[in-house]
Structure formats: structure tokens, C-alpha cells
Amino acid sequence: MESKPAARASLLIIACSQTASIIFAFVAGAVPATSPEDLIGMASMAVAGSFVGRRLQRRFDSRAVDRLYIASLALIIMLCLYNAVRFLQM
Image (cartoon, rainbow, N blue to C red; front, top):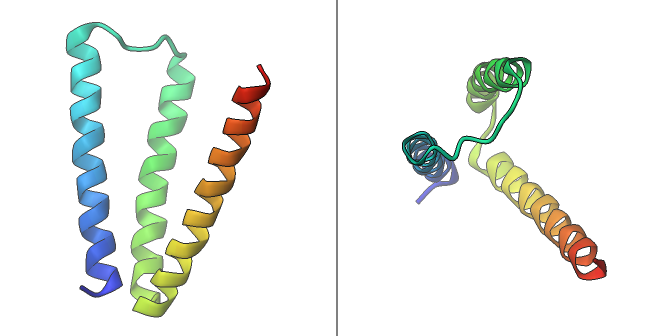
């Protein structure tokens, strides 16, 4: 499978998972307390990100998508290592 269709499918799966998680949190009454300003900020950045992503998607070929994927994986690995070290020091 080419990288661009695979990325679209992955994003759809993530969106469905997060939607189910939000619904479950509301049903279970386990919604974390947060300010309305934070929620508005997160929602507006998500919408802005979708517009930016759509524009960038037209310009990227599969090779560029592969490079971005590798870079994002490296970032996630570094964050996980940082969190692991921080957790183990406690």
C-alpha cells in the first residue's frame, strides 16, 4: 500500500478510536476537569491542523510522507524514553 492512502486510513482509525474514547468518558462520568478556554483552544487547533494538513497533503509525494512518518516515529520514541527515565527516577 502506498504511504498516502495508508496515512489516511491510519488517521481515520485514530479518529474513530478517539471518538469512542470521548463517548466512553462522558458515559462513565470520567471526563477530566479542564477549563473551557483549554477546550476551545484544542478544538480550534484541531480544525486549523486539518486545514493545514489538507493543503500540505496535496504537495507531498509518498516519499515525503515516508520521511515525515520516520521523523514522527523518532520523536515519539524520544518522548517515550524521556517519560520512562522520568518515571523510573520517581
